[in-house]
Length: 146
Ligand code: CO
Image (cartoon, rainbow, N blue to C red; front, side, top):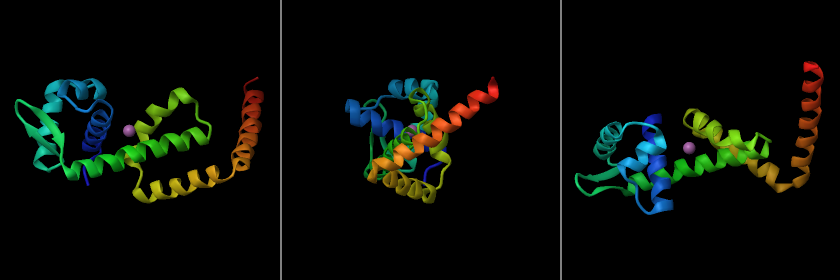
């Protein structure tokens, strides 16, 4: 498996290609807030490990291996966003929270979170029950800070 940093790149490349049709060094530098030369170095590394195919003047594409890993990473990202949304995390926090945790969870934890998301989606009442607990805790928190 790729390292967490490599995962960030593969994930971004995969989502850039699926939304824009291509991924350029400048797009990646912008998305990951790094210098273009850093991107180029990582692309060469990803090329060596056969995740992308890099052609010096023509840019790069994902190999079959890269596509497979990329899809898995993007699906994981989407699952975690859905999970945080279901448990009621503020919407504006969700993306950064997912970026922060996604590379650090085991695939076992991801599978179990998948079960939990399914559990809540199967029955609306379960989400409403959770919201009741949230409302109770939120008002208790407010009382404490009074
Ligand atoms: Co992500």
